[in-house]
Structures are given as structure tokens and as C-alpha cells.
Length: 139
Image 1: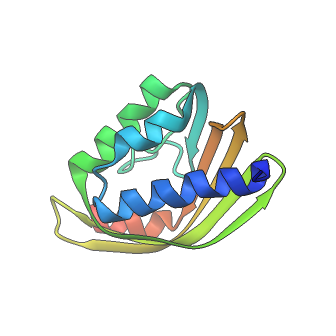
Image 2 (image 1 turned 90 degrees about the vertical axis):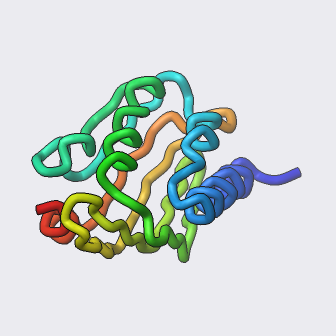
């Protein structure tokens, strides 16, 4: 039997693989393992021009993040190079690139995602990326 750490990493490997392959079209896969009361945050904390990248406190509200992202940006790639798991926590480290649909500029940034799981469901998420790079591509 797989440990919870290994099981949680496998959930994310599958999710990030689909996210990259579908260029952001696999939102429902993420929603499927998100707890209804997930705490979902982003380092810009809603600052313009990344107003959608803020704190959300449940799965339904979290859809607004993805709606904003996919409305304004087209994914070039989403690559996870490393998973670090301890207890109920998994950190995914890699990089991603997105093209802003209005400006045509590409933002390529290192990316770190922090996840916390409980009983196979994601209960906490927080993302870290180069906000200055992304803001410059959006303006």
C-alpha cells in the first residue's frame, strides 16, 4: 500500500500532467480532488493587474481564479521538475510560461506550489511565482 505522501504526489503528478497536456483545459480534474472548503491563495494577493490571483476560501469561489487566468492568458507550458512530500504536505517546484492574450507578451517564471492534503483531498494551496515578470507581460 502506498503511503499518504506517495499517494498525494501521484494525485499531483497526474493533475499537473493533464494541466500541461491540455494547456489549462483540465480544471475539472483539479476541482475533483479539491476539498469543498479548500483554502486557495496566491502571492499577488489580488494586486492589479493580477486581481484574480487572490485568496479563495472554497472550491466554488476558487473557480474565479481559473476563470480569470484562462480568460486573460494562454498556457505555453507548465512543467513540474520536483515534488517534495512530508506528512500531509507536498511542494511542487518547476516553471511555467503563459502568453497574455491582450499584450501578446510571454511570462516565463519559476513556480512553486504548496499543497496540504487530508484524506486524499486538497485542503490548502498556495502558489509562488515571479509576480513582476507576470505583471510586465500583462501591461
